[in-house]
Image (cartoon, rainbow, N blue to C red; front, top):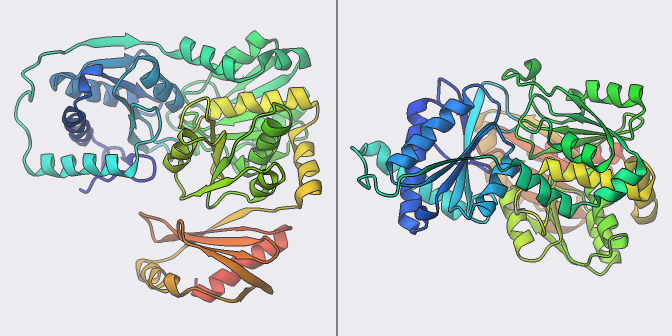
Length: 468
């Protein structure tokens, strides 16, 4: 089979693609990459989430790295991906291997390589790892490449250090003074207990949902999207909580629920947070967003005289923008981080920042969003997945370079952006983006207009133009 690293690592179905032999192959390829860079002596952190067999897959990775003479910092228990990323910096390691398939269905598992900066691996790094995979697959190695010098295994628990770091990034005193009640839905994932510990110490009242390990995730996906958070909405309303926070399987993505049960995703919270950082915290600096993320951020940035960095989809690009000076970066699919944190998305940080904003502003997040849209203009972003067949996908991909309409849904097209897919911006600030999935016969249609009907009209017009 062909093993490739997508936007966030290699993922496969367990027992079919994701086997112990293939995990060992990928681990050996990562070892070869690190040995080639010369930084391997600093060691590698190995973390894993709560998925089926994750701890055993992690042990396989650990053993392969040790056999190659690379020291290993092995996490004592299941940890969120952002905690593993933090551990890379905390222990001064050369990188990390994280066993996770994030928000994917329960039959999946995956491997994510995190370089020394604590962010997602850039394409040039994953390409080199893939080359080693192909070379090793063609000529399986025999024995120990290094003869064994430098082997060392250290069992670590980065939880306390990570939580102390988060406490320095968030105004927990304000959270305590506000007497917040927060419900945290871990969705059976590795983030269980983290937010509860920090918020309880701060003086908030917390309640946990789906905190126990369930490799089947209750029969669904550990993805904090509205249709999977009925239980969280119900618990928030029945307990009179101020806020609900949901985390995906490895706690790098988030979803929020207001006191009235209203859902807020990244497209809704990022503008609220960016405006808060600029107007309340007094921070100054640009914001980074993916090409598929709301332009409400752009309007706020313009008011404060700040630039916007637009990136391809994938947090590795957002992470690079954070390292280059953006104070906040995020993507519509549920990820954000701060320059002062890590160049990696972190749902735990997002949850704490949401609690801070709710406490300091003293109003529900949804009300704050409505105030922003009253000032900067309403937006109704949406994503539509269009499933097709390989032949249609090929035809549409061939047609995309020539997609240059002068008008769309009754509005003049004023800008065409090809950062990732094809994005058309209209004269009223509305926009529509079409991107192809890298692995499936699938197109994603993102759009944003002042109201849901006009957003849907943009998506339907694109489908008509492309015959989808």
